[in-house]
Image 1 (tube, rainbow, N blue to C red):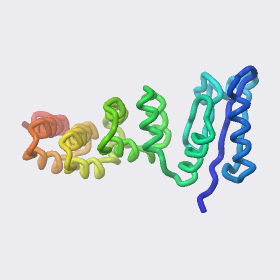
Image 2 (tube, rainbow, N blue to C red):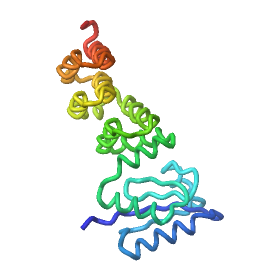
Image 3 (cartoon, helix red, strand yellow):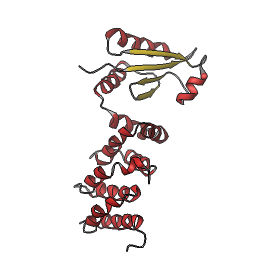
Image 4 (cartoon, rainbow, N blue to C red):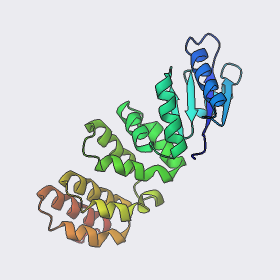
Length: 214
């Protein structure tokens, strides 16, 4: 049986939606769906709100998911289930990026690199809004040359052989940014790709890894 997650709720006096969210989360504690609920009055503890980067309330964290606004019953249950099953990070990141929350998504994966494979999943997804795919690419590009992106080289190598040219192109681009010479054999294979754009991206990435190579 999945372990129930913990939750944190920030509220403030005069907030019209805070009592409702508090009541709904408290009920989940009584039901055993949440292991613990911590409630913080942001007006009395502004330093805690600042530490969490919270600018408006109600603000809720369920497991790893940080959620803003008036959460309905269904939303709370959805994120509790995802946190308990250790799933849903791809959905959460997609929603963040779709809402323009690139900075929040970047902060999340920098603090917890284990969530990076979920970002790669967004690049591979067949049906995904363009701005989400763009945001996922930008997030990964921001890790260029670092250990976190280098650790993804094996998975990027797999994506470089994907059936979709756009996925192969994205993977080749990121392999060049990873700064790992181990990516060279994969990129050299893509020089023979059926898609001319993929071939061009692969060549550019090889040049990035081995300046003056071509």
